[in-house]
Amino acid sequence: MFLGTALAFTASRAIGAAPPRGGAADFDAMWHAIEEGYAYFDDASRARWHALRERGRLQAARASSGETLLASLERAIAELRDDHVTIAGAGKSVSRRIPYDLDIWPRWRGGVATIEAVRTFGDADVAGLHAGQAITRIQDVPIESVVREKLGRSAGNVADIEWALRQAIAGPRTGIQRLEVRDADRVAVVPVERTQPAPTTAPAFLARRMGMSERDIGYIRVRVGVAEDLAGQFAGGLVHLGPTRALIMDLRESAGPGDRRTTLAILSRFAKTPSPWQVRQPRNGTKVTDVVQPAGTPYTGRLAVLVDRWTAGEAEALAAGLAAVARAEIVGTPMSGLRGEVRSLALPSGLALRYPAERAFTVAGQPREEIAPAIPVDLAAPAGGPGDPILYRALKLLERA
Image (cartoon, rainbow, N blue to C red):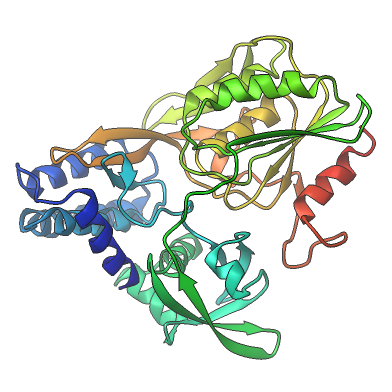
């Protein structure tokens, strides 16, 4: 209900009037693209996709405006329960983007919706929520009922339940979202004031030296997904830092899906020779190994890559590639776990469908969405003193570099 209200409001501003060819054309193009190219079907998701065909097409055909068409297409792709399948219009997301607009990351543990992470400075952080709390109600509705409503009549596994939790906890774009949380033996209702995401003042790229000597540690933060020349800034940042005994690359603040050119440009600065960095496999196709070519003088110091639940999309590919090419050690929490390599399709109305058309693997053969940090950090019980527990663990790791 929260998402529906927000969806209608944003859609009306983003795409306006009904598409000239009618909603059925959009639905048909979307349905066939997913049916023929989506790389992550299992028996359950394929059955749901086939079952919605006539019903979904009818709803799209009846759409009298851009916002109602959008709502019907969003309901259809929800049957896949995959955050990497999206509909966008006018170059922008027309619904609350997950994970990019999410500020609470929930996990389903033993039948309990537990907060694993809270995004720093997000609405939930400002309201006082933190990792380790359990969410028991949303807008006074028991969390179990919220999940059942999202999943519909078909049962779900843990991955499906956590998808439903993310959808529900994302909340409305504006207004008060009441979350009942349990912390130890105390239960409280926390009003979270949802606000429109404000343009960030944080720079897209930041390079600093941590220490005074030339053998100290370099720190680079890259906000993947920002529409700037990140590749050029990264190359300049390495020159600015000069020689360091180790480097920390912070990929914890993805602003959007990102682009492959930036990923390859950054990886090329760590490659000594042509280096395999990922493996792709289309549905019913053979695996293909991608190779990055070296560029410039490669960085040869020890590398730690910081990640968390908001390391998403192309940032996940970059983290995996750095582990393969530069033997980087990944520090933090699991990443967003967005699946596969995305293909885009322009629908007749001008909306754009994005969906994973190839599975993605590390060079060692692990599905990219299952990557776990080599140095895990539990944000509910972090080690070390106050401050940034993920950065702290990276610094401890590199002390002997």
